[in-house]
Image (cartoon, rainbow, N blue to C red; front, side, top):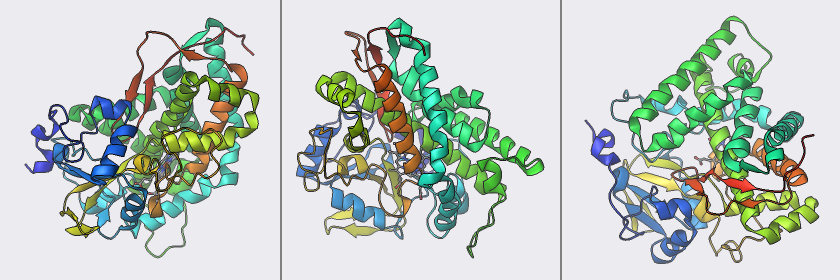
Length: 420
Ligand code: HEM
């Protein structure tokens, strides 16, 4: 058994003694508020290292993260999770790793054509068709709890929107949305610390997608899945197979759901706990698009990893060894004082805000137009109907950490309203 799959890697390594040499992305403090920890790392050792979870590097400076994102010839995307594969999972060939969730798990040339397959569906004009659906959905979710004056903002609102939009987009039964949430949690949430759950979830999710793809091979429909399957791409390397489409759909479900619900949730958490920002947004709804960029920067949720294909020196003193994982810490980069004025202060109308919440380089988020549309619509409808809200006193909040950070339990209270 290789080191990467040995069960002892999964064991908790006790409290973190030194954040620059022994960080743990599962640590409670890191999950609840990583911002001061990144500041410490950035100051003392901008590319920190840990031996936990099989070993990884954690760059916290904007320039370093952006530079590493460009090193696609040495730092491969074929393992984007820092957690090792669950013990017992089948060995995958390089090709299988790359198409497992292409384009995010692929390097060029596979990356180039699989990304190109997706771009038209996510162009700014193309995603506008989902605005009405998202708006209606947001209203109907609020109708469920507005009369009671309380809800769980994570579970009953933020978490409900992206899975339904994705189901609607790829053309599967929107009734599957609750199941998508369970699967996403099994892969990126609880599954990160529970290898058996991750393995089981992966099998179920891929089984479901495989069956949906097979159905469309037999009986093509008017939906994105069918479009991807029968796409003719003008690219010399393109080899679109059902397996490639299964991988892409797997990515859309995982990447499109956890990320966006985390961002909607963090934004609502911020507004619930910062009354001045909430009142300003209620009074000046026209600042919402700028506020969304600050929510994205301040609470950037996504940290994907890379694996080194061979030994490489970075900045002279960082000796990356073949097989080491590197965290693309876009969220920490978004708090680098070299790039953002007063980065650890949330400024709702921040004027200069070239953040990297959507990543940087060839893997920059292909779904950013849809993500912005969902966030803006979800927040606009919420603020129109529930402009005053706060966390319920004494009830616990829960954040998910790891590689996608956001609130998972968020007890809210507000003056009861009426259904539409
Ligand atoms: C606020 C929500 C979102 C955030 C913060 C986010 C963030 C990111 C980041 C940081 C990456 C780069 C990963 C890397 O470098 O390895 C990425 C890639 C990607 N995201 Fe998103 N994402 C969000 C929503 C979405 C949505 C809604 C979709 C589609 C349904 C989506 C689809 C993708 C795809 C396909 C890639 C891979 C692009 C490539 O490898 O070329 N994302 N996302």
